[in-house]
Amino acid sequence: MPAIAVLGAQWGDESKGKVSHLLAAEADWCVRFNGGTNAGHTVVLGGRVFKFHLLPAGSLREGCKAVLGNGMVVDPLALVKELEELKNAGCNPEVYISAAAHLVLPHHRLVERLSGAEAGIGTTGRGIGPAYRDKADRTGLRAGDLREPVLFRERLERNLRREQELWRSEELKSLDPRRLADEVLEAMEPWADRITNTAALLNRALDRGERVIFEGAQGTLLDVDFGTYPYVTSSSTTIGGVGTGAGVSPRRVERVIGVVKAYTTRVGEGPFPTEERSALGDRLRERGREWGVTTGRPRRCGWLDLVALKYAQMLNGFTELSLMKLDVLSGLPELRVATSYRCRGELVSDFPAQAELLRDCEPVYQTLPGWREEIGGCRQLGELPARAQAYISFVEEHLGVPVSIVSLGPGVETSILRASAFSRSR
Image (cartoon, rainbow, N blue to C red):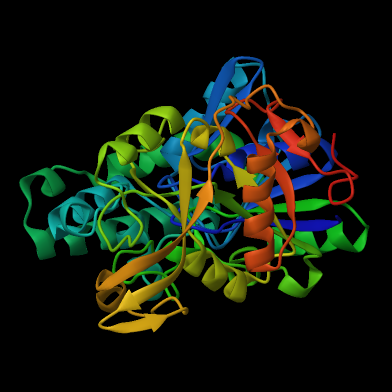
């Protein structure tokens, strides 16, 4: 610390929430800087499962203040529901919302469905893309508008009428702007004083030496600029998103943790070179509980892809890795790891910039021996089978980045922390 970024190194769903929660034991602030309710971060604590869509996972830690940054698109009704659920569970986090964060409203979800993006690209259907579209089009509503009710009502009616004229959908026409404005303003009224300039808030906190975790949503390969476009999310999921989505220079981030599964998964459409459509893919899905937190959709599963991870490392400059769900690989006689691709007759070691090229890539694997032992009960690195330790070392050597956390199950307690890289965490 004092500033750490926790970023997904694959196509999302890497268990970033668990890592953020572990770090938040010693943090003063936890920050979401991109995405919206399309995120699904899970923390299993004391046998209870907490699922976050807007709040950062560090919110469960007492004394760790939560920030929804300006790079997010926030569904106010979903946020209030999430806060109420946490309160009912005995948690009452101190939350601050960027006045510059854009809002996701019911008409955004309808427009996303009408546009066909949910079916064609495989989006979550939460209205994220249309909200970011309004942001880029400079017509969006922002959280700060909620503190100016007259302005909010005017802008909401203007935007809703525009969509109703464009799509001519009966369901869309049934939305009444006055009633919708009343509902949103009433729901957010208790939180209006928490809508503020969070960039200034966070930079002052860092100036005081307070400890801040930046919790990314989705993963590097879903980045709107650097991911497998158009099968991507609508925000910046990389280290650059900390600057644009939280208003804090990435130069202030001392540790950049890349969170990676011991295998690879993907939800939705798009190329996936190491995908296994065989019984092995089904086995990984069952053992790894690979269903989306937000949508419930089954995740596509396959072998670890080091070509993609080297690309993520290049973009983010990871200082360390968290290797998650290593226990899922137990019992496999051998493990395959993609170290290069064969693409249109050529051997390539760089991740293609175009989805069309990636679709034509076949993985070139290196085979490693597996291990029979179940490892979920291990709490020290030395307790792992030699072959499991060798798998970790292979990843470290190939990427040139140390593994600081090894996760062996969904619970927070099923983690091996390397003291040299993690000395401040409990």
